[in-house]
Amino acid sequence: KKGTITIQDTKPPEITTRDYTIIEGQGYNAGNFVEKGFDWSGYEYSFEKEDYANYTAPGEYDDIVIVAKDPYENSINKTVKLTIKNKGIAVKYERHTPIDYNKGYEVTTEYELYFSDYNTTTNILYYANLTEDFKYFDEQNYKADKEKILDNSDYTTNDEILQIIRKSKVDTIGRGLTGKDEIINYLFQEGFTKTQ
Image (cartoon, rainbow, N blue to C red; front, side, top):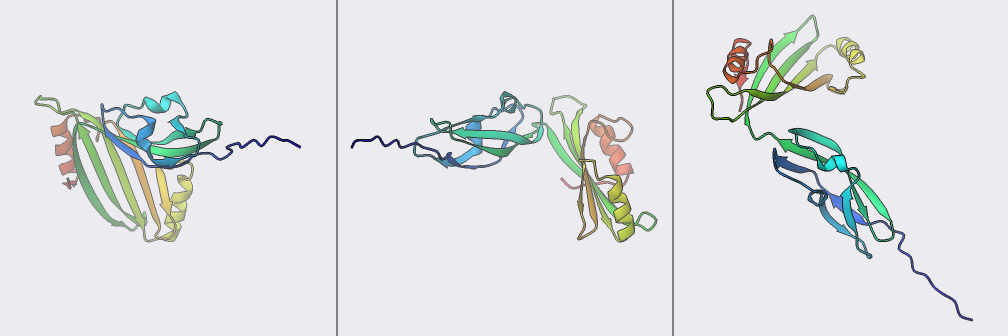
C-alpha cells in the first residue's frame, strides 16, 4: 500500500523582543523591537496595527504589539514599549516635604522639565513629567487615600511600605507658567532644588 505523509509546521516562531528608545524625530520599525528569533520555515514580523508605526510625540508607549508569523500562518504576539525622548532641554527639580501629621505622610515631588532648544532668549516648556511620592506612617490614612484613587491610572500603590506614587504629564507649571525662566524662579520660590 502507498500513502502520503504530510509534514506541516504548526509551531509559531520563537522570538525574543526588547523595548526600544529613540529621540524625537527618529524613525523606527518592527524589527527594532526583535532581539532574536527562530523558525524552521522562516518568519517575518510586523506591527499588529498600523498606528503602532506612527508614534511621534515624546513619551512612553507600552501598548505596541509585534506579530511574528511564518509562511504557514503560525504566529505569536509580543507586547513591547517604545520610548520617545524629547530632543529639547531636560532639567529636574525636586522638593521634599517632611511628615504632615494630619495627613499621615511625607511627600517628595519631582518635575522633569523639557524645554524647547530654539536659539531664542525664551525657552518654552514642551511638557513636564510630574512625580509625587507619598510615604505614609499611618496605615489608616494610607488605606483611606488608597480607596480614593483605586480607579485612577496615574497612581500606583505599595501596601508593604505604605506608599502611593502619582505620575502625570503636565503642560504648564504653577498657575499656567510656560517660560523657562519664570518656571525656574517659581520652583525655587516653592522650595525646589535642581537635581539634574
